[in-house]
Length: 302
Ligand SMILES: Nc1ncnc2c1ncn2[C@@H]1O[C@H](COP(=O)(O)OP(=O)(O)OP(=O)(O)O)[C@@H](O)[C@H]1O
Ligand SMILES: [Mg+2]
Image (cartoon, rainbow, N blue to C red; front, side, top):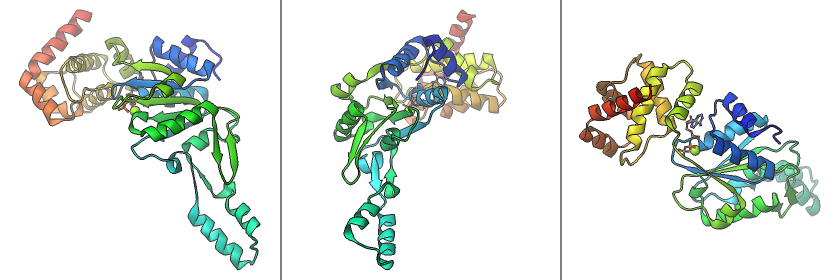
C-alpha cells in the first residue's frame, strides 16, 4: 500500500499540505502495514478529517467518506434498493409481457438497481486498489451502528440477502474519527490503532499555516498563533482549533493587517470565538492583557 519509510510518509503528507508529527505518522504507517483501522480522537479542528483526504491523495486512491449521525442506518451507510427504478422496470416488464416470476426477481434485484452507499463502495470487489474509507465522527452514531461496523471491519464483507455476499478483494484503509462526545466501545477500539491528536505545538501550527496559506505574513501568523495559544489556555466553551488559526490569519490578510493589536483582535474576534459566552469571557478578562502575554511569548521565542 505504501512502500516508503515513516519520514517518506511525513514528506508525502506535507506535499499534500498536511503537517503530521512523528507520532501520527507512525500510527498511520502501522495502520497501512498491519492493515488495521486507525481511530483518531482529538478536539475540534485539529486535522482529523483532513488527514484522511491527505492520505488518499498520497496513495493516489479514492477517499470514501461516511459522515456519522444519530440514526444513521444500513440504508444510508451500506446499500439500498432503488425502489423507484425497480417499480418502473416492473411496469416495463409487464407491458412487454415478459414477466415470469423468477426472471422478474432476478432482474429487479440485480446490481443495476442497487444503490451503493459508502461502506459497500469501500469493499466493492471491482476496486483494483484499496480505497481510504473515512468513517467520520463515529461518536455521533448509535451503538447499533457501531456493532454493525465492528462486524464489517472484521471481515470486510457484507451479505445482501437478494444478491449474496460481497467481499473486498482489496480491503480499504479505514480511518475513524471521534470528538469524544461519547466513548467509542472497547470492542471497536481493540480492533483499531489509536491516535490522539492534540493541538499542535506553536512551531507545528506555524508550519501548518505556512503550508496552507503560503502568502500570509510569517510575523502575523506567529502573532495569531500566540494569541490562539493564550485563548486555548482559557476556560472557553469552544476552544479554537487549527481551523480557527487558519481562518484568522486569512481574515487578517484580507483586511491587510500587518500587526495584531488589541483593537484588531476585538474587531475580528468572531473569526475565532463562536459563542457569546466566550466573547464575553475574553472581553471581561481584557483583550489587551491576552495580546500582551502573547506578544511576550513571541518575543521570548525570537
Ligand atoms: N496537521 C495539519 N496540517 C494541515 N492542515 C491542518 C492540520 N490540522 C488541521 N488542518 C487544517 O485545519 C482545518 C480543520 O481540520 P479538520 O476539519 O480536519 O479538523 P477535525 O479534527 O476533523 O475537526 P472536527 O472535529 O471539527 O471535525 C482544515 O482546514 C485542515 O486543513
Ligand atoms: Mg472533522
